[in-house]
Image 1 (cartoon, rainbow, N blue to C red):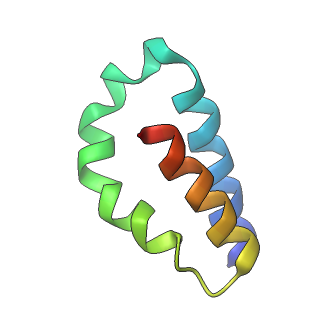
Image 2 (image 1 turned 90 degrees about the vertical axis):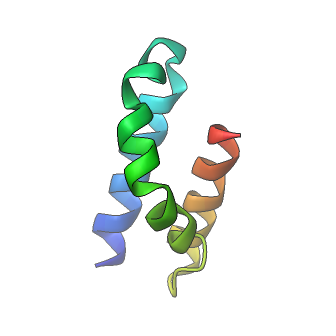
Length: 59
């Protein structure tokens, strides 16, 4: 559901906010980066906006 997707994105944003977490998340990021990109085109606008925010964090 959209709520689950949005909550998941929010949790990831919180993890990626902490610079010390980023190196240990590299395998996760590599594995799920395509899915994160797909979420930016989600049917639910709130999910898509959150996903774009997450992707901006990863740049």
